[in-house]
Length: 433
Image 1 (tube, rainbow, N blue to C red):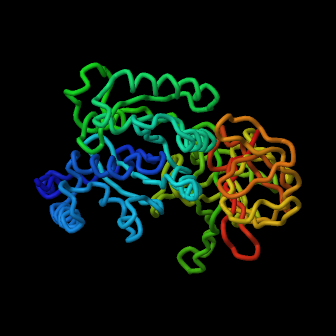
Image 2: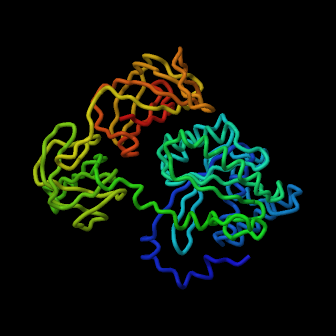
Image 3: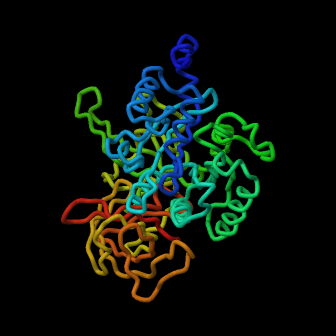
């Protein structure tokens, strides 16, 4: 196989590469729907695999007695995954084309690994949800679609896979699309695309299929390269959670005091009037520095160091925001939770809480309802939220949180709950306005 990475090394432009737009996407679906095979096909057909990697997978497939190269082995790296032919943990892969850079999160399909899907999808711009053409829409399809919607993923691509096993029948595809469209009317995600594919044979993955001429849409790779994601980031509400206070304590920088962190949303400029939350003190931005160089402005999601004109008591967990554009501030929070622990969420239970760079303790004051994954109905009578369940809770924190609704800002609108006894993350939460 031709090694594209080697062949184009002399033409590589590092500056252009660094400035390329980055698309994060996740794959989800039921067990054996072909998620890992699809990613392997994307990497193979886009020539993003080295020759030695391909030879290793070919040899492994041969030892297993398979007649073709099993592309799923490119992402199923754990021994147990290869033995069972399933994905257990989230696998991340990186590749690029002349148009974009990509980070793929290959997430598990088993119901007991739904929490891993939440982890992989939490930062995604797009979710690829696979459906087996023979099985149609199943419970896990709905579960993953609801979680993708709850996590605020702006775009969904429903790929009807294994079309080769149903003789590329248009009627089968149309039936699945119609059923999902009806289900999706209750989802918050509105940008949904449908593509019939065969990940095993490569139909409509990178190259158009001549076996489905009835399909007039784009290939999956074309969608990934061209879908508009620039407006997915909130560039209006400036939010800068302080992660670290920079004090060099040297003669050269004797009076230097900078506030380092990653811009969660918005744009920050030199001279901007900002307010420090939760104290409410105000100042002006003296400088914005990136990698030791001063900039006129910076935007999400850059990591920068900010200096203010006034000496204000600021520490990790505080937040800089633009004056007149303040987040909400409260100790009483309502949120949707994806529960990740074997032990159900405890009413009046106490947990550690992490919100942006702020740590606090929280108590669960009320379990309002559990969401029925199949019908999206709310179970309000004695609701119990266990592993992989989704529900709505009310909590009270020991210190006020400065937050936005999750639908408005994914960074400041989310937090995690941690078990005090084991330090294990037990809940991923999205704040409700």
